[in-house]
Length: 217
Image (tube, rainbow, N blue to C red; front, top):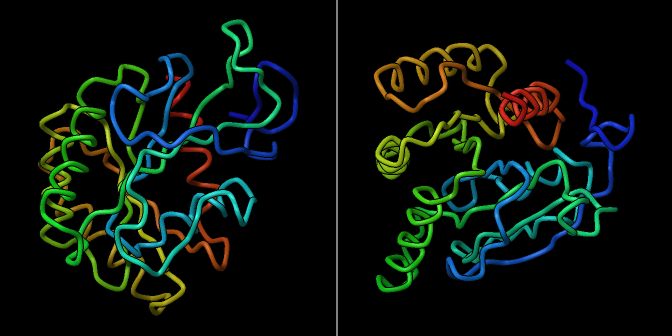
């Protein structure tokens, strides 16, 4: 399968990408149209870096060392589309708020949690959520809580290991297998784990191919 769009033969991820909207509440969501792919993960898991590496645009998604800085659903689309009904982008990437931050006020965390669940439960154009797991730490309790949320919302999700350049190469296949075993009985989990490194470019082609498959099914 080639990574091309119906508009021309230029690969989808080779286009320039742009930020179009930050969504702090459901009423601000863009109209449903193109398929959407969302990225979730603990704060500082490398989510913004992975999105930037995926589309080849270092400054697209904001990276920060401050936990919980991304407080909205951030929408990105390929540039060159007017947004008119007859000229919709072929897909949208959605950067979801990071979770696992300890410093944010409880009411703020509750508001973000509600926004995320409402989005997951009510967005018919959402094709898959990629849940990022730091390969140095593995699956944590709050990751499992997110898995349960996705299972409850019946939204397909796939695990992506990040920062694999930070562990020994020999440990990656073992970590992939351990992760597969932990999600084996989860009803909405996709039965394949991807191993990536934004810094080294590892696994990005596999992730792009997985996304294309998800949006064209």
